[in-house]
Length: 269
Image 1 (tube, rainbow, N blue to C red):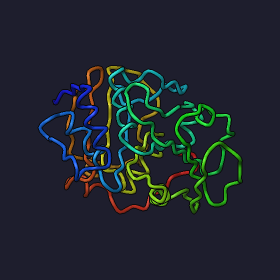
Image 2 (cartoon, rainbow, N blue to C red):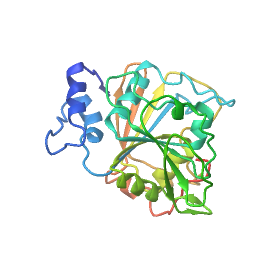
Image 3 (cartoon, rainbow, N blue to C red):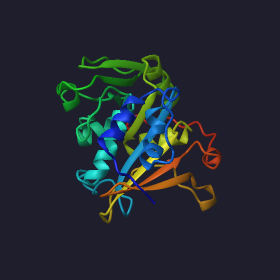
């Protein structure tokens, strides 16, 4: 297990590397660089999915209380990831349940553009991210969604009975110059980006907490046999309060995992 000892100097180096792999190659000998440089220095499309959960794999209680699952170092890690990407994606259900700010508060760095998959234009405009004066907000809606006036840009993509295609979402964001993406929630949104083969790295941060019951962080379809399970190459890092699994879904092992299905983002992802 590798330990993450972040310093101001290392963090400044990572921020300077954003989108410039050819200009500042990462030093893989350092645990900090091995973990964060792939997203900081990625050129072209790079998609990271992030889940913070308890030891028993829960991300909330059955009533939906999801606050304080991650410890302080798990939260700092999430905010570092936000600062190193260009946009963070969540589904409409996450906004309804958690009313998140999706900002960088635990570390120094730029706030990412906030992207909400709101297929049917369900948000009212009263949600905090429309009123907090923070980073720009982009709503991803189906082409047939009703028009509503929010403090956000609206990108419309085709909608089928299965929902929105994650590829269309990433293409629409790329047209806006947003290629380094963090998919932060909810469970179905993360699952559909994984199933579509679009996630480069998956970070699962585990906090020393046992909830007992409640939703999981990735809502993948059930399987019958473990031979069908995802088995990505992974490195394990000690963040401090939390343990992090850094899973490479683009590795030789990961590239053969349950690929080939055309999975769509559901309306309430």
